[in-house]
Image (cartoon, rainbow, N blue to C red; front, side, top):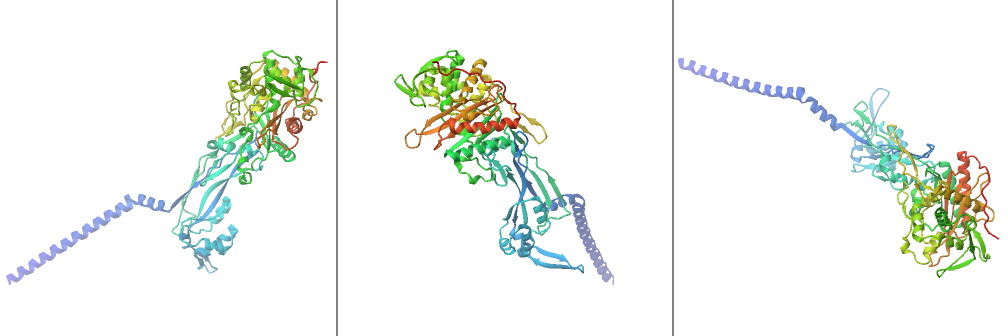
Length: 601
């Protein structure tokens, strides 16, 4: 019996040990799970919740509004608006269920997938539901459905809660004045969802205009729809700077109309006009014929999308006589009444030159008469009173042969060879505006120098740049440089007034109520067939001559009729200058111009 009791006790002890082991194991498991639960709930819960939230967040770029370009009066020439391109993730939209609640409060499924989504979207996009639905079926993660939607239109679409309908925030560039100042503004191109400058001021000031992009973060549900009560964070972008031009939109419009009409009437390849404020270099108008419409770039041939006013040099013809005579007056070798014997034709150093007026008798002409009637023969005689290097120095000082620094890409320096490279004929043709080439920007700055007391000031198109914080940067202007004396400049203006009088070459440039000083130019140029039968007609002028306010330069390139600067370029000067004077409220002139005899009997 004792053995049986001992065996029973042993079994009891074994059972107790097993229970103890199970208890320890269970306690260990409990402690492990409890610890893990504590770790998850107390220690890792914030991290896990954050990871879960991050997995539901979607962040979209909000394109910064590209800065505006405005005229001198603040009139908008280029602006930006926010738009949305809408795409579909075809895989996600397949999970869509269109559910509504009926009158009894029951959930009813009206449709599923792309077909149901298309029925809701089609009215908002103005699309056919069947066509739209077909576009939404497939395995692609992004297919464009519509572009250029307004923010309001996108919000209406987002409110539908359709999974897989995703936005792409972009900005569009608007040019509310069509092609007015298109040659100056340039245009933009799209780089992904971004707009970048591709010509003109848009290109030159691309960095300032660009701005800083913002972002929008929203919380997405399992079906890909935006959770209305979820996280929604918006960081607004910082708009680009506003670039204010010196251009007056209304004067620019009139200038463009004038050159376009002249090109159409006289069959010219192109024409341009520049109107510059004397003393400041500020361009009030700077127009090309056929200017590009920045909002419809492809409608303009690529070769005509730039600014020929700065990129297309031409021989100035007789407007170049101003430099020769101004240099001679400044050096003191001639005065307005200095007299030269001027035949209709003359041979000098083996080179023969003739005046544009055929068959006129040999005359004793004053310097004033040589300028007023634009005598080539007389101008060559004046030019021969100076060394070639000396004349070349004056040409450079007037801005010829180098870039002006105007704020447009593609500016040409023109063509001006060194005197050592001039042959026997070129050294004399340069005296009356041939054998070198200038841009319209250079020519208007040249004549403005005469109106500015002989001080050269380079042309400019930029008034100021206004930053997003409201601060304004005014570009530094280079100091003007003296070219001729103030007395010489005044003498030149007095003689130039004779050009627009009866008997001069440009009576069509006269403006009622205002005294005008001007000079015509008609240069022969290559005709494309190996000859020089084509012409370049141009005109430069100062108004009012008694109180110089504006300098104007006009060019009409290769007209097929009309031909002469006084015939087709001078009227452009009159139309544009007259409008600018009235637009600015410039008082009419007083007094009468100084008159010099042209021919000594």
